[in-house]
Image (cartoon, helix red, strand yellow):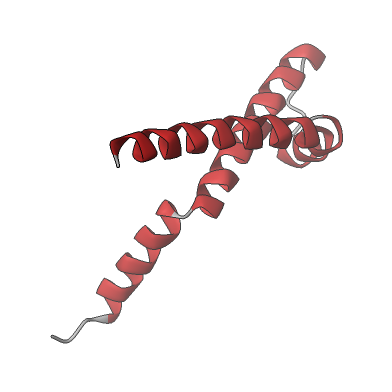
Length: 87
């Protein structure tokens, strides 16, 4: 079967969308957008994405990532335990 360039592009996009790296990027982006909204509301004007990004990285990224790793680690270990019990 011959695959077309369009089918390959579509398949590649789906693979990327489902990758854990892309999911982490989306989750981090969502946090930055929340931070942008909160800071803009607090200051009374739109601070812009770049300022929000830099501010969030400086103030929140490390703790957010640690909490995220902990959360994902717990869900992974829970699923491993469930799989082990089923075996």
